[in-house]
Image 1: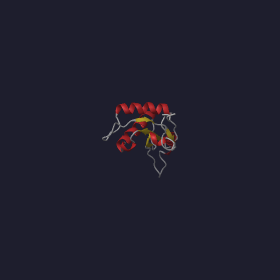
Image 2: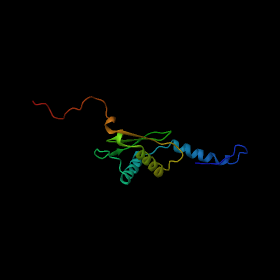
Image 3: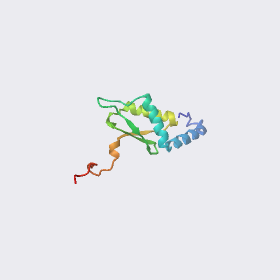
Image 4: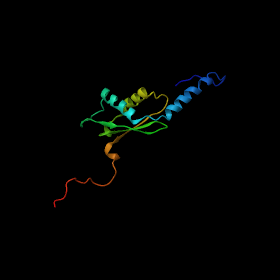
Length: 130
């Protein structure tokens, strides 16, 4: 928010503290995953992720993984296809639906597979012949 003040005569300083409190509140805000995923699904219906010569990019879910600043990690099948414009679109959707103003928002795109434990190759479910 923009608050006009004067350093020479102190005009407007009393109006400065309320916007500071509001921005500090937004900076440390925690958003529930269910609420976040509802907004993600609505955003996906409005504007689909880019598909650059591959099957369509799907966004599965996205929890908030940090505060100060609010940080969101969205899991998708092709994170390398998400460009800056689409990230900006998501940021604007989050700002609009959750009223986040005056603070930075971090958005991370990750593959769902990168979240799996590194336990070596997957094992087949077939049993060995007896």
